[in-house]
Image (cartoon, rainbow, N blue to C red; front, side, top):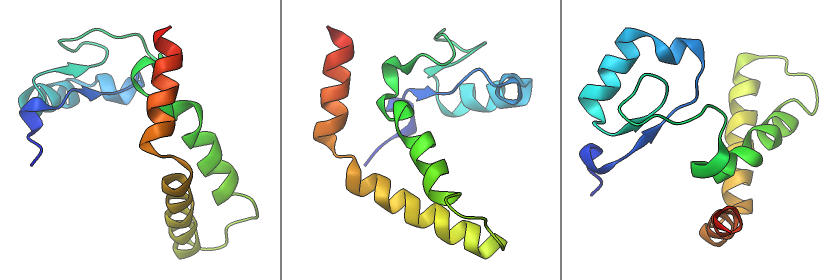
Length: 104
């Protein structure tokens, strides 16, 4: 099983993430978290630890909003379908390869 104490949580530098309540919660639940004001400083938008960031958000947006969304239920279904496509397109091998390229 995965234990939170062993996970390094990473977040971006969005202003809502810098709120004292958020930082306090992260410190209580993830002693080693990366983000502005956290125990491990890390520059915002750095892709070093998040290889999916190059691909996933643009892909999801293009899939979800390929045509206008009419209902909340339709939006949820499209998000789930796009997430499934991400799982199909990304494998551990792809992510490891992306990390190796950055390590050079």
